[in-house]
Length: 415
Image (cartoon, rainbow, N blue to C red):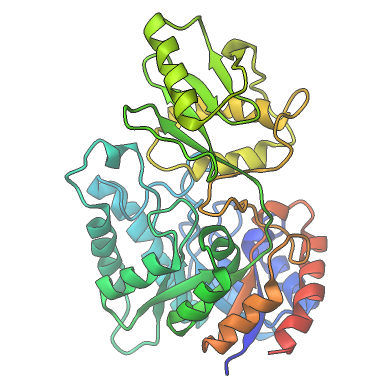
């Protein structure tokens, strides 16, 4: 049987000085701390060997141990996180991400850490426009380039983290990538929240993937309103039992919401006769029987609101669309969620395979079976650190830090 040692990610403590973050995690009782890159707190382009020595000295003076270096998908552009990815079509773009992962290896080496983690990235509009290029091959090639940074005589493992909406989204896809790369230095990083979002039976999936996993992320989650955004195409056949669909008409940049309870056409002007017929076809094909509502796009509130974090997290997870289309959809999603006025949708928006929202909740505040997850992982043979990752709770970091430990410590101790 294995064991889970609790850790906490500095990605949830970015309002603090980095050394103060180490102290906070230590005081809270965690055994480990995840060293997460952040452009304003722990930036690998700014830190040098002298600062790494200071960090290591602080860690040596505390009980807490550095568990993993996370190379921060959000690092380069706060408005376009995860980009550029290891699958970017342009070599220069891929090399930027490869360089960041290699910097993660060097930082891990300097701090005596043997795990470095990253994600695959998303299929973007550039991939859709170039179907002859295999993004999976680009990903594997980039990972091999990252692995070359590891010395033959050191114990270092790179980890892939499956994430909702990404090219590597499920455990099965992660395991297949391990086979493709075929290196003993490349293993799986399991995020329990992501598994809840992406697996039909997440407990079985955790148990099956555990032998290849070396690290965990932990947070809670809950069911939401599953909504897909797609371009209109002739063969579009929405399954509203799986998710509602926001159809984007590329020629007018209007949107049609296919939803059994509230079908809505968000438009700038009255549709042509041909577009009106197309809308009727889509409504009929989706089995929508309620009358179509019309909302003027220019009337939508497009400013900031308390929902910004939720909507941003949702939109960036939508693959295959340009950022301009996603930004144009933002006020539509805000309208549905009640950014200004009454909400049409009373649950957080989700873009997942299960309808669970990819929004990291404090453990114990969602509906994820964390005790069952720990049990499945340990029964599957996992042994290692599980880091609480709560980047959605930076403002309330102290509560998130303490409440997480209070809820999780008994569960970890039971295994």
